[in-house]
Length: 317
Image 1: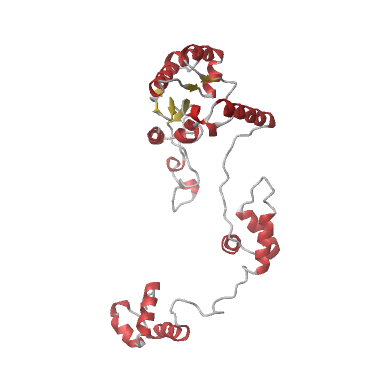
Image 2: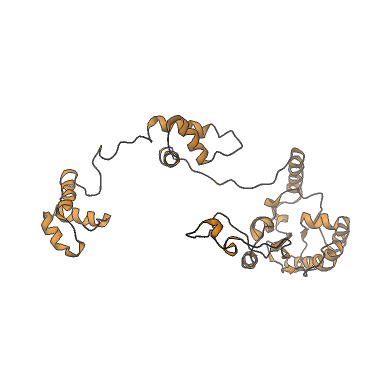
């Protein structure tokens, strides 16, 4: 007998409601290869329940894992982890519950998602900020809010730099090798991924503001980015872009990495060549969420990416 799909059962239900018998319905579809004995079961279900797809109440195997007691156990275990900074894996939750009720991991997932209507969220990496840094960040953020109003914010030219590593990242979870042999018998060239110890990278410096975006400034290959290089090659170009986008006064913002690199030299240069700027002691530490270059243009930290991904990041720019 050909397998009855969901659409086939609905079609049979419609024809059955119009008064056709089992043999007449089978004759309408000779290419299906339906068997009369099995076909009669579907017709009987339509006659008794009025539907060919809905199961009768109480039919099927009784639920042994998804019971009210097990649902309560799962809820208690999950809720007990809300105040815990660590994470409770689904597999660990299944093992913990299995010791009590012998519930499988799949049943635990079913209870959590469909019975308790819970959602799982992927944990995100974040910088470790101690109390002193947190307090300093709060104080400087409040000072910037008092100094730079909403109108002045439109005059700020944000700058930043990023390293694009040219070697591709390796995803060990999804990048698999299939073979009918044992792992020791698989050719090493298929299993091993060669990585360069000192991966080549490309550094890009740029800036944005409400009025537009500046140029992409690529650091010369194998160039030593020190205070002299930054003041000679990068900073004048950034300020030039800033003057073109914001001709009537501007507030220049330099990334914290650049400020630490050039120390007091860049501060003196900015005092001479800029109408206004955000000093290194004014910008909150560990605050990538306050610079649009970090959270919008680059879209994250300095992680290894392919050249195509670097091009995509510059497209966002």
